[in-house]
Length: 94
Image (cartoon, rainbow, N blue to C red; front, side, top):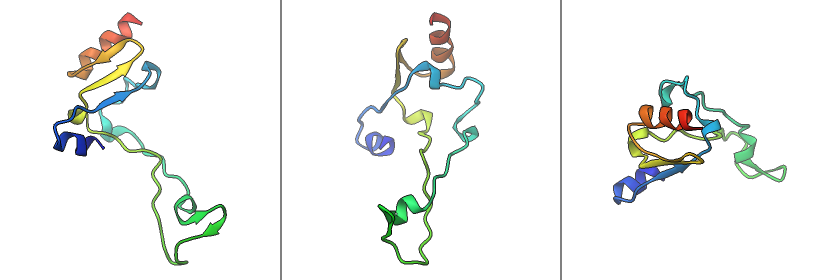
């Protein structure tokens, strides 16, 4: 969605409480992406809807590149780039 918003000059915001921000993580590449069971994609209510040989990847979430984010909406206000500074300031205030 962030890529589509960027393509059409629409600002993209993330809403997230400060408790979800891990300041020890240096960048998005360092975030491990949880993978869920492939059956969540290939089955509905226990009935297989994909051919037997079909494999599926089922990521629980993705990571939005920071350069596509106009701001992060938190309980401490809207954080804006550069995020290293605005995140640090938000934690100091809270």
